[in-house]
Length: 94
Image (cartoon, rainbow, N blue to C red):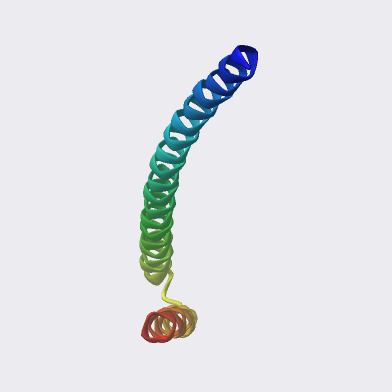
């Protein structure tokens, strides 16, 4: 009977240890989820910045081409940029 009592106490101790480990693991999981969210936001910010820089680069290229006197081509490129901006605005409004 005493052996049974010792066995039960041992199982109870191991169970408590497992519960503590489980709680610790859940806390670590929450921390990692927060970190993932932060990184995803950072990626989104960097993508937005990249898009802005690409747009500025296109505009600078167009401005550099305007000295050649090709106004028609410049107007076409500007119209293309305006359409892209309109698409972006439409996506933000969704």
